[in-house]
Length: 118
Length: 114
Image (cartoon, rainbow over all chains, first blue to last red; front, top):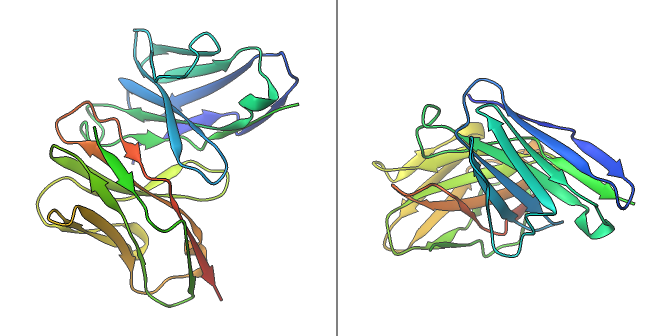
């Protein structure tokens, strides 16, 4: 099956600094990538959808200047949390989809990144 | 727009007992349905999916689910659970033929006791 690798799995940063999370599709080309945020014991909240080579589409209430998404290639998307604050601490998960892998019916998920801002 | 309801936030069960995790959805159009499993501090792994055809879908790890259009349900079942099945389970729905952006339920925590 298709593999999506997310890095780092855990990161601790100081308040005010920026953190970059990478999401890579290892064995397929990801035309679309999704970024989710998951609060403890809760479901996944879609933050944004990005298509390769174009600007990300952010969900309502998600600050695009704070959560910068770049999808510069068909195998890599990055989420940068800028000027992080403790309330940004959360579990972030990416998923990737391509027309070739599973058609347009399925997205494949990364392992997630646990961000802790101190 | 579609929505997913997982009525049970937590389901405790003894090892080797059967289990059913409930999922109901709402949508004005045809849908695809999915069940994912999430182990602690990990991403989501697809258990099974319904796209079309047979309403009984078999997935990995001995799980199966049945699509019931009249009841708008897609309940997940396993005849005999193991300790290793302890995890969070998410039901998701997306519009068939749409842009495929899944909507997730809030999750059900399956706790298997020895």
